Amino acid sequence: MQSIVKALRDAVAETAATDIRAAFAADPDRFSRYSIGLGDLLLDFSKTAVNPKIMTLLAEAAGKAGVAAKREAMFAGEKINLTEKRAVLHTALRNRANTPVIVDGADVMPDVNAVLSAMGAFADGIRSGKIAGATGKKFTDIVNIGIGGSDLGPAMTTLALAPYHDGPRAHYVSNVDGAHIADTLKLLDPETTLFIIASKTFTTIETMTNAKSARAFIADKLGEAAVGHHFAAVSTALDKVAAFGIDSARVFGFWDWVGGRYSIWSAIGLPLMISVGPENFGAFLDGAYAVDTHFRSAPFEKNLPMVLGMVGWYQRNVLGYTSRAVIPYDQRLSRFAAYLQQLDMESNGKGVVIDGSPVDGSSGPVVWGEPGTNGQHAFFQLLHQGTDIIPVEFMIAANGFEPKLRYQHELLMSNCLAQSQALLKGRTKAEAKAQLLAQKWAEDEAEKIAPHRVFTGNRPSITFVYDRLTPFALGRLIALYEHRVFVEGVMFGINSFDQWGVELGKELATGLLPVVQGAKGTEGLDSSTAGLVAALKGRAE
Ligand code: F6P
Image (tube, rainbow, N blue to C red; front, side):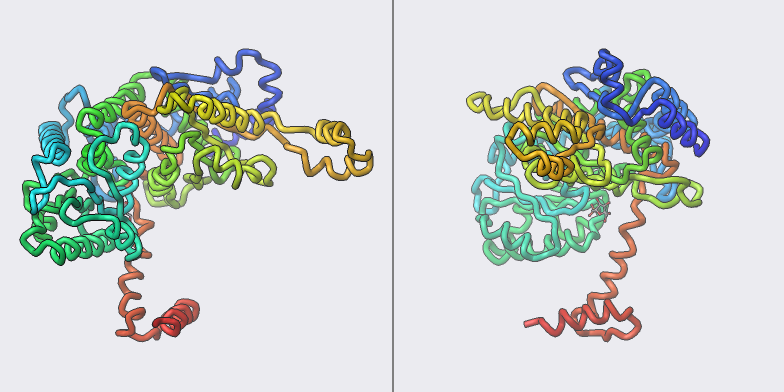
């Protein structure tokens, strides 16, 4: 791979690829050359440092990494998650064609369909009031208790699809900080609240601890006998759920071939389904399936996940950009960057390649972001004038859901387009000075101030445009990013589907609990940790 990286670096220098502004000036067709679509979804990557030579080399790099073969291995249920000896089959959860998907000699689709229809019946029951609380009252609120993949997916999508929300109010409790559950419960009536305990492993300390607090909330107010009416669970560990005391009829399973951060399509999506209804949830799965089909069949230059992945890998590994910002111009996607942080950074933040040797070059970038226009008034200063180049990924719908506020949507669209335009175009010193002189600044002062008003420009961005943020469009967007992470992971040479990097901190926290509680001393700890323990204990009331 290093020979292609070198060839790409040479090509960048020879073709002055990072002078994106010049590339636009030289080619009036640049937008149509470097924008591709899937249905109403448009991906414009013309404002990145690509040209025909770079695209050819990127295709070569993807070919050399074996992206197409590994993609097929994933869809076919091969155990590509080698360190956990697991298949990676979130795609089976939205396999709307229902074609057989074989794992260990058995088709997983009958089980997938059975859970989906059980979820549908449960969601309908909650929404209609047929399934009610212990005192017979209809549920007005559901609280999902989970963390990581058992929280971010449903929380992000429930917010994103607010215009479709006609079920009970949904709340999400994740943090082990008691403030999270306490502040949530304060708003709720136990008689009309349903808790969904969501945990793939059903061992995660945050979730189990919050689940116990929720259980006490119901038992204290309504009595022990009421507990069964007010809890449901989602997990792969059905034995552990049974031990917690949740009725098996209210337990929705999934399987070890669904990674936590890829689990929104499984029963982990239950709170979303209860919020927007089974039909909209089905449309959400349809959107993801459309991307799966496209990913497997479209030629690489028109293949959205391929192009997004290749460009991302190029920006990280060839151009050396260490982070990327994801800026949806959509307030309802305000949790999208947080969701992508787990999807991308837990998948591709790895230090070794598949055979255990160190990554040759770089692996995944830092992913971060906030919705526009808010970000413009916070960190965009650095995006425009900071010393690092940070590629930006914008997304914008042509239509909002507030026809009476069309003017606000027009403002939103113009701001989104203006930001990518400004990143590209920049402003020279001569232009800055001319502007100051026009504002009647004195010549010597204008000369001094102008550098502060210079924008280098040539800063890369990608823009997604789509009709409207429907369930279908949202499913499509998430699946697109999932496969982008896959393509990049294969090109980095890593296993994107394990997450050993989260283990050490968990182990140490378990060891530190008795120290913090005072049952064990600080002997053997480094002096910083021991000092911090003492500082906390010294301040405890
Ligand atoms: O700590 C990381 C992690 O294992 C994630 O990968 C996962 O999504 C999250 O914890 C929650 O795990 P679980 O669903 O098993 O409670």
